Image (cartoon, rainbow, N blue to C red; front, top):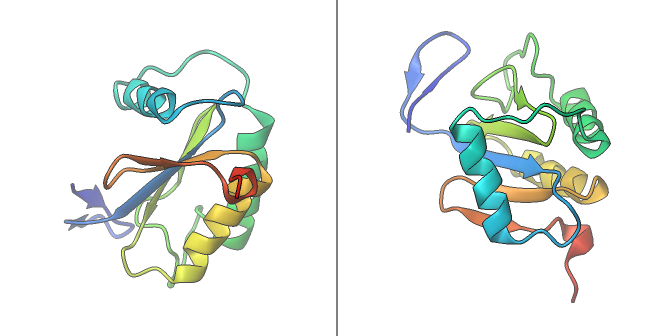
Length: 130
């Protein structure tokens, strides 16, 4: 996978996650199907899900995606935000705290996590049943 960095050069690797606002009880297969629709450019006409809006505002308050400066975790800016998801392309060297914050905020907003590296789908930590 290649991605264009802030300075316009191509990077061979980025660490890609996305967070998804799907109905309660959505399965990993449903998340993967939504990811595929996005990759095909099929974004439904609908109002932004408040969970996505809340997540986007919170994550970009901590880690701005507009005019991102040195030390930004984002390899691709601005973040891709749609009505039902936010795509996060991170530098592979970003601090672990960024990933912890993404997981925490996904949990606070009831969003599913999709790991593009291996196709794994994770419920947010707040929804994991011990």
